[in-house]
Image (tube, rainbow, N blue to C red; front, side, top):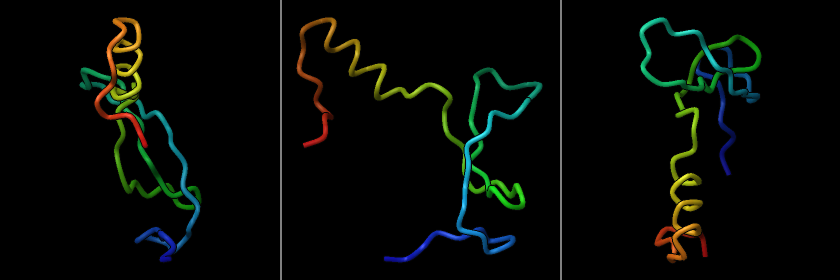
Length: 68
């Protein structure tokens, strides 16, 4: 299996951080290299799938996207 590496410095260690974005309507996470801080991805702060699954359970409905 291939190992993911930073395109900037070659490190294979990553972290999620919440940036300060002045004009953002929603909170986000940056997935960035733990060594140099190069951003490799963006993730929603709230996990929409987990929120939907929780709502389905509260309504006693089967969540259609459950693993397995």
